[in-house]
Every structure is written in structure tokens, then in C-alpha cells.
Length: 227
Image 1 (spheres, rainbow, N blue to C red):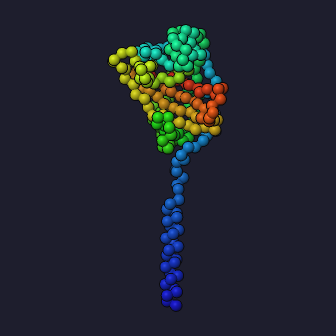
Image 2 (image 1 turned 45 degrees about the vertical axis):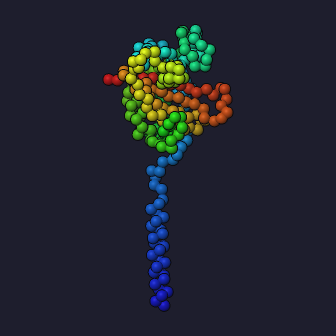
Image 3 (image 1 turned 180 degrees about the vertical axis):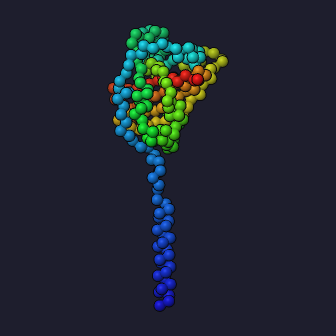
């Protein structure tokens, strides 16, 4: 009889231990999803405005000392080449920009953004409000840059879109964050720090394959002057 009672006591202890262990390993409410998809309102990325501002940003050394800027061919009257990303001598009369404040205003502070590295998702996610991008743009005036470029960061393949001087101006490219949306597009956010300002880069691009010809990426640019 004593052996039966002892066995019951041991089994009871094991059951309690098992329940405690189960409770310990349950995921918390703060578990971050690998890639969360949002019903993001992309209306500001569908509405563009005619750019009638000064081209003051072209006076920054980061722009003025470049060999060329990767301008989309549709905006060139007199191109230097016939490639999709080409150097323009003369722009067409009507070019446009997007309202970056409206684009960012549709991202909630607690939405998760994935960190990209080399264009690939690292699996590391942040709340939008916790990113260095958010901390840079929050409450700042973003001056538009026309959406005529494919990318503003330079690269040095045979010096294409690099600099025409040995004294290369200072610049630093930030991390890139990606918001996954339910619109078959993803939104990527990054910035380039230069001596005079922070250049904001936003890209909205189709993520399903094959990509239809009428689903071209949308580019939005602007800059924040350093105080």
C-alpha cells in the first residue's frame, strides 16, 4: 500500500513539473513574425505631382561631382546613350515627384519592417518606430527630389555613375528596411547621409514573378537638410 501511495506522489510531482515547463516555453506576445503582410494604403504612391521646384540638390557635391546620374530614359529629351538607365543631357519639360510625408504617414509606428542586406531579407524585424529611418524623418521637413532616377547611390562598375574626381565626397548608405504589403508590392526605405543633407530613398516594387510589364517600380526621393 505504501508503494502505491509513493508512486502516486511521484506521478503527481512529474505532472506539475511538466505543466510548469509547458508554461515556460509558450511564446510571449512580443514574438516577432518573420514577415508580416499588411494592408498598406498605397494611394500616395499612385498620385504624383508636377515638380516645379528648384534643382538645388544638384549643387551638393554628391550630385555635382558625379560622372552621371542613373536617369530613366522616359524623362530625357537628349540622352547620351540608349540604355534603360541613361545619362541625360536635357530633361523633358514635365517631370514629377511623390509626397513622401503622405507615403510614410500610412505606415503605423507598430508595423514590422524587415531588414534587408544585399537585397535579401535577413530575418531581423523591427517596429517602424524603432528603426533609425523613423528617427531620422520623424518631425523633419522632407524636400522633394524628382522621381526620375532608378537609384541615387553610386556604384563603381567601370566608374559608371561614380565620381569624376579622386576626392570623392563623403557619403554613407543606411540600412534598408522593407514593409511587406498585401498589394503584390513591397515598400523599401533607406537614406544616404552626405555632408549637407540626408537623402531619402523609397522604392515600391512588385514582388511576384513573372513581373508584368505594367507593374513598374515606383521611386520617391527627397532630402532633409542638416541643421
